[in-house]
Length: 108
Image (tube, rainbow, N blue to C red; front, side):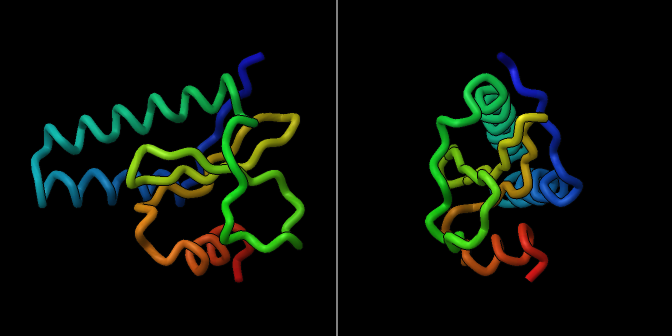
């Protein structure tokens, strides 16, 4: 079964920021390559959404089925439900992920 994937507006902004940063600090070609690979990772989530691990920064009290996959150093954080997969966050894993996840996923 292929799950439908939805990407939030915030995660789309993440992709735009990643592209812009890489294009400015490396090259537009490298930025395009990274976005292509992140797209491939997203497609793999559609086929196997439960393969990802739960982000260790999320407290146990958050009951939703949040998972993550990597294209190092980037992490794609997504939620799995019976209706599909929602990608909430795409970020460099070297950032303060706990604060970023709490703000993005819980509004806290």
